[in-house]
Length: 259
Length: 253
Image (cartoon, rainbow over the protein chains, first blue to last red):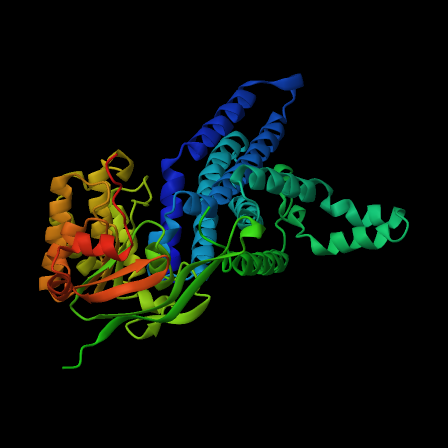
């Protein structure tokens, strides 16, 4: 674990020293603040729009950070040849994969904490109501979802040659799952065979990232999700992440290091 | 007297598929047998493309041998633990340029599980050794080539290795930089460390090495003590090297 944490520390330092996170946070803050000053349709419940926009921006920013940071990790190690002095130490390729995953996931977690604190301050100061446990659930489930996304992008980074193509493909796949994943079974019912089986197969195969999106619960101040469901969603995310990381290792362990 | 074998290759063979299918398979290393003993400074020589870097890549676990085997401290190089007691300096500097020297050394030190207190002391010692104390907090991307090579040497020494593998350590350095690297190698030798290094600077090799091996086109051509080779051929190492690789000087028109 020591090696994995050392590797993840470098990933977090890299994120802190790049401008991506700061730009996205400032953009989220500025857009949310601008929306906060506007008063659309003289609606007293403007705070709900504000929360919705802020959470949407947090989701988009978190995905950009997760995909952008992860997509370049292993390709940059190979391209800059930093992988050579690293693997010349007692470090296995499995540890490299685990360390990169851990670093990217923890970095996403840190970014999410900053975003959710901002969201909490904006939302709480307007509503004078502080449902911290709901916010924590929203944060936790989004973070678990990002674990699956990070593992998926890491797999893409050892399959696709360029980080940009990997990033674009993963972004489209993640958006596709988030927007269409829940409807695939209904689409399958309407299709003739063999397409029906294919779409059904896809429905059961993809990680259902949309399950982790509980923005509506936070916006409309619904009750807490029961913790057992939260726990099961966490296990589901952990199993998918582990499977994707295993696949990444299978590809990476035989990969030539030269580019 | 029995000397401990630190590095060994047995019938090591490395083949690569040529980029063009019509060119078949390229043999980079042909049945190489080498032994390096504890406390030696061993020069690994050969022209460009001779197979030196490929051999080092096998020793470091970057490339798998097609056949034969290689061992560090009698442990198969395919096991990551074989690299616990080695330090490696690549030919060119490849480090995380957003880190500073201190952070880089701390990162590598943590990989070797150097205890925290020892690591602080070790980092101070190494930065002093490579004369980078003044720049320890500056990002590596702001370093000159010589400074980057020196931070590379420091990272290779962070675990106080018993074996140092140096791939052309003085490549691209100015005369002062070369002198410093040579001094460090000699100091390590005095400390009883084993050094295995490749170089094109044959004068330097003659000065610091106990034994050398010369390979050409993947084959071991000669191996022996520098003093014995020089005495046997009655000339310097550079001429021995040129003769062995079959260099024919161009005749003046």
